[in-house]
Image 1 (cartoon, rainbow, N blue to C red):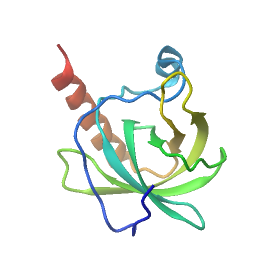
Image 2: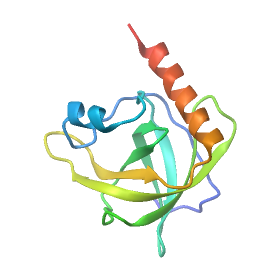
Image 3: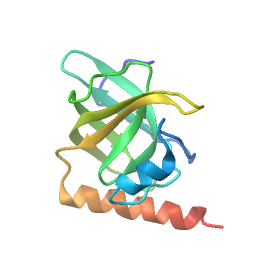
Amino acid sequence: MTKIRLDETYSEDVDEGANGIDASDADDRRCSGRAAVTVRIDYATVDEIFSEFTRDINAGGLFIETEKLHQPGTEVSMQFHLPGSPEVLHTIGRVVRVSSGGVGGPTGMGVEFDELTADDRVKIDRIVRGLRVEGAP
């Protein structure tokens, strides 16, 4: 795990990730689709700053792959840069679930966006849909 300043941002290449729960159950609960994309997430809790990755993002939230798990309900301030977009998105979210990485899935936590603007939700959704189309057989 790498601690960094929150004003540093990165973007990485495409890959699909699991979230430690049955994929069909997760898909049933999601309001919007997810795409195969790896993004660096810089996030902070009240007393610490982290930089990790997500391979699971949509307009409602994301899954942060990390060994440093926080309790559900923990507020996190996040920023990230999506592929194909020049801007850095800043938002507040809260941990809604944690995964210890069973059955080959990654260890990490699911974070739901609490303070993402409607415009940013549309941007994320558009990028996710575009990546899903590109990745279609």
